[in-house]
Length: 270
Image (cartoon, rainbow, N blue to C red; front, side, top):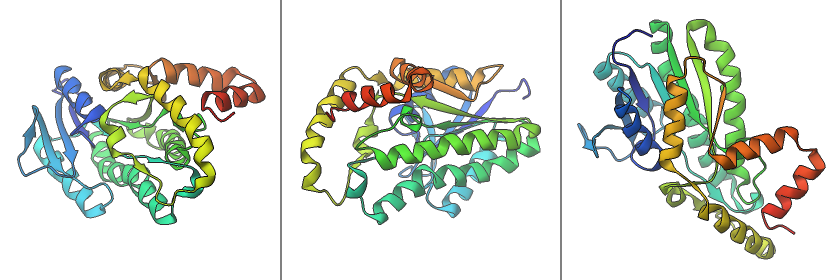
């Protein structure tokens, strides 16, 4: 990358991790354009330049990326942050609900990345940060489908990194743990609840409340993102916060049987 001011394009920038990241990148010297589904033409919200983008629409993504590229002149950094969650047991979600989740959390990332990659290839440089989750490498009862989308991002990001590295582009994954953000407001309950899971749900809810009481802040995740964006020797994965780092360590080094027992107990499942 050249020494001129770096530029960043960030999806899901109107709240939570995205909003904190946009502000932190601006402080770090980046010119930033973020996206929001509800952005108005020319909108600047809380000091952040926003443009409208629906990541489930290929046409909307193409228009947003073209507008950002025209305004910024180049795109040095892409951060795929837009997403939502489903809370409930796996069989409590309809196929339609699961399809909508994948359309945003996985295919949304693919659409935006596909639109930005030609720009980065032409530049001969670029960095793509996909905001995953600690649930992308740890099982997540009652967050099964969300966890599956984040597992998908892990495989997509690592494979893509090998494909595009020869063009001067790197692809990294940010792995937040439990984070106290407005993401909770964008999580939806499973649309076909079953009473059979009520007893297990009580234990999960208690465990979840404890986790949220010790949750990391959106700013701490934003700090990790800025570090990944500016790291001179970038790594593939950046766990963010103690929970994610401890989970990554346990997943790697604990015997499978012990890991399963600890996780089962942690989620209040008996």
